[in-house]
Image (cartoon, rainbow over all chains, first blue to last red; front, side):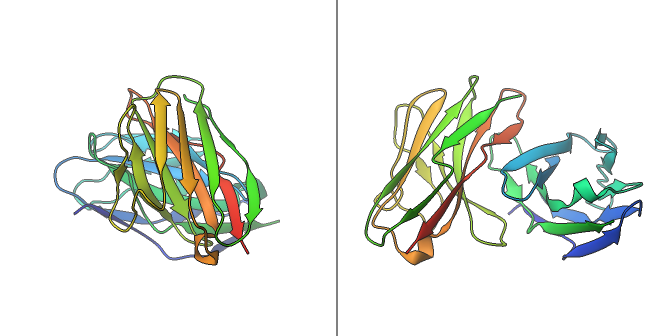
Length: 111
Length: 113
């Protein structure tokens, strides 16, 4: 079945550091890929998505590129801020099938 | 994008009681879902809420414990029945729109004592 694996956290960085959170997936065919963010005490928000190979999703300075050859969708940001502290979830779905989540990566940014 | 609201936002309940969580979407969605998120964990799908018919439950979840209703396209309820401390979790409602994007409510934080 489909699955998503994220790098284990927690991840702690200083403000303005470069961020990478790794995400790889297992799926048959061509799933859509997503990154969700969960700020403390809140629900999940869709951060960005990509629906086909080589697509790049971007939002709020975050980017992720759909790499079919490496089955990856790594999240990157060039300069993080304290306000980016949250839990980040990589996810995939295929058509009408359910959304499959990774285990989540807790990110803390120190001033 | 869809905006999803839930109530209550949190509750503390006694063992053996039941709690009904309401979910309202501001626009029509094709599918609605209920998830559970235990402390520090990822999301686990409980069931897909089907309009006007019985929900479709995932393995490990049963209707007697988590009855779900969806009387129309924009509203659903989840009941957590005969609660025990193991049911303490965040329960999240979600809706998928025609663009296949899935949106989440803010969650209901349930503590069972």
